Length: 308
Ligand code: TXA
Ligand code: MG
Image (cartoon, rainbow, N blue to C red; front, top):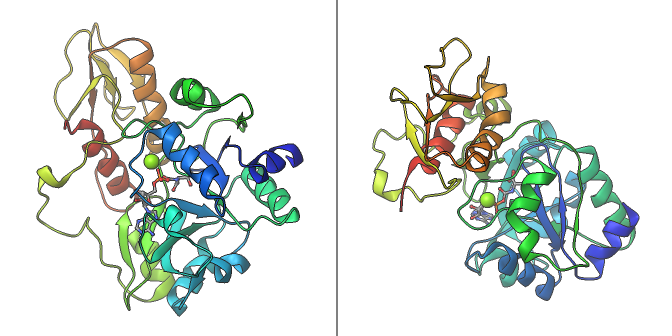
């Protein structure tokens, strides 16, 4: 952990596990190091990065004008799968925020991530910028092997990949915009609308609530090479992701059989990755029903199924 923290301090990249997905980390204050993240991912530079911090005490380093409800959310759900978007302090530069006046902050709940952040703090680091450790538009890795498959060709010899086992949540953090009077969910995740309402006493604005879903406004993301199709009958040769009670038709490769939402989310990305390893052309996913975490899973499925 000490040498990994030192690598980050020296401007190298360190991929590390979090409870959601693996991140590709760099010193959030080092412009050249952050540029390496964009290069390795092939990501447009106007997409802002999340800054990972070791405790909520550090919110005030990176953010200003923090509303009370955001402090409550941090108190209840950090460390955890939640990112808060706040007005940035002057430590958070344009190269990190894609030129926006806000910054995304998260305390991850993974022992290795927290150990890395603590070691980095010991040598003066204030935060680690990390997007998911995948090429732009591709499936987020939930294992160290997944990171290697995505990025081995794009990392330098001094860069590191830390192996902390499979991510237990499996889909990215809930992102909550905390820059107005009402919290607003920008990306659904394991911290649900209901949990946010319970903590803040305010019902968050949420894209999931909106009745209109213009499919054209969906960006293709989380997409494997295989074509992802939703809620249709699979045919021979297809891969299948479906709740455990559903049978596997003859000739179909079962990729995941979750017994609950948590398992669905935990196995989803690895199942999509496995489809590509097996060179399957199509994956059929039967979507989970219901609100809360199910909505986050459907959000990811819809994007991975969207072409273009
Ligand atoms: O679970 C996660 O959040 C993972 C782990 C590694 O922490 N990280 C992650 O990062 O998913 P990334 O970069 O793949 O997705 C972060 C999303 C991007 O869509 C970005 O546009 C948005 O967060 N974001 C970051 N900062 C923002 C800001 N200041 N305002 C609005 N959106 C922001
Ligand atoms: Mg990502």
